[in-house]
Image 1 (tube, rainbow, N blue to C red):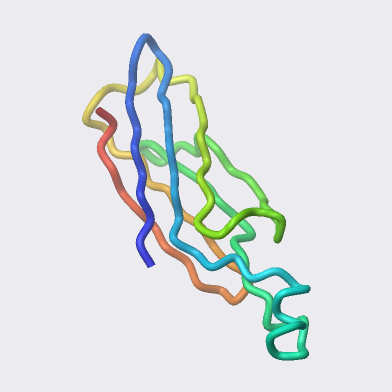
Image 2: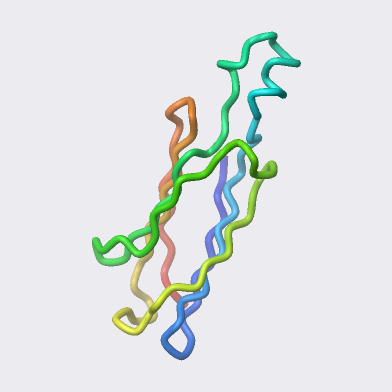
Length: 104
């Protein structure tokens, strides 16, 4: 695994790009490969915090591409450059990853 995160603060807006490295196996793909839909595995939840404050929180589905790219714009007026954002994702099998990046 390996997730890329970029966060840039400019004029009170944080531009955030997140690219998790994940195969994103759908129910149909799992059934074709193994004959069992329960083998499907995709990211189901993605969230981010700055200074312990949740800045985004989303649920996702199987309809994302392999290694999806999320682009978000967040209100960054109360945050400063060099503060840390923590991005966390969770998949259907319980695997997760948390990435910490400084806001540039």
